[in-house]
Length: 225
Image 1 (tube, rainbow, N blue to C red):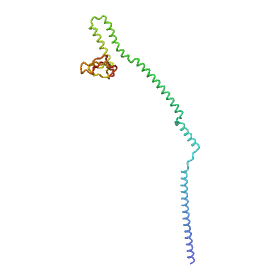
Image 2 (cartoon, helix red, strand yellow):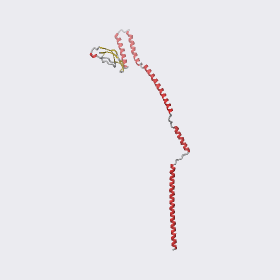
Image 3 (cartoon, helix red, strand yellow):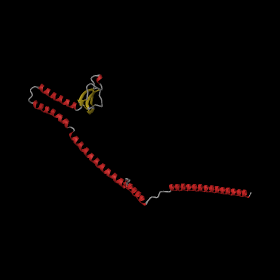
Image 4 (cartoon, rainbow, N blue to C red):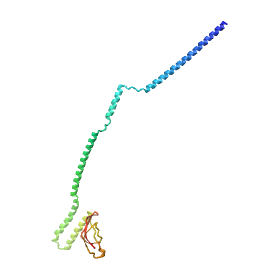
């Protein structure tokens, strides 16, 4: 009986010891888990804090960046000041004024030269007509055939008219037409010989001429009334 009681007591003690060990193991496991969780949380917070914390630059790196920024600032083009802009505009104005003055003088000189030589070609082409007139005048005193002299003068006249036409000069028509104040100038009026001649040109005192369709001399005429 004592043995059984002793045995039961021993079993109880063993069970109590085993239960105490299990409890201790559970407590240890919970403590380990809590330590691991705390360590993990601490590491996470530390990592986040490191990420958020600005990186501290070394003194050499800071000075290098300052030097680069200074070089970039020196290399960048500087905006001109108001005084510089004013000086530039004055210089441009002086240059432009000088160029215009040179152009004006050159143009004036060319215009004067053109005025002097504008009629050169016309006068040069008139010289043969003058030569013919001189020959005709010399032959007047020696001429025995008056008809030949007339033909010579008529030839000179035809040659001169041809020259004028080449220059754009042509005669204003006055033959049997109505009086036109745009191209005619009335010298006087006389009674018309016929009813149909009233208001028309009866006689021409001085011929008029066009130069390229522009009137350079009005025809002086007599009109019927």
